Length: 121
Image (cartoon, rainbow, N blue to C red; front, side, top):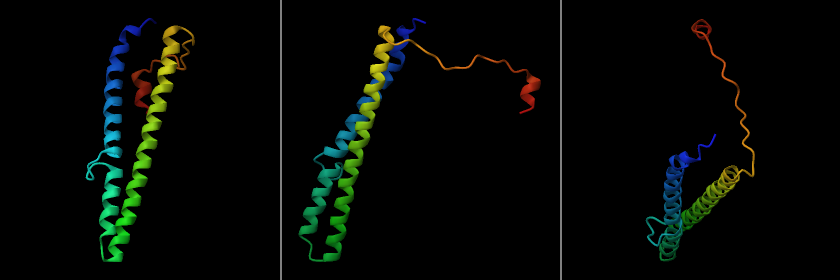
């Protein structure tokens, strides 16, 4: 087996995708720009709603602020899921590389198919 030298082929894209995912998620939730961050956008909507004279529009802005807070909660939940998946996978990879876990493959043996058998499909 000894193909750990090819680890870099999958590790570099994984690190890139994790960096992009976590930085974008952090910005989307915690950015101070109300047009970008969920929480600052919700605060901005609540400030705008508190100064309105029309109660219908104010109630709509308060509802929208609640939706943005919920969106922030969902985004944090998904970021935590990604973190747990990557950490769990890294733990398994580390155990495989160190030889503490046997490598068990659940693949079937290769069965060649003739062109005549393939034509039946």
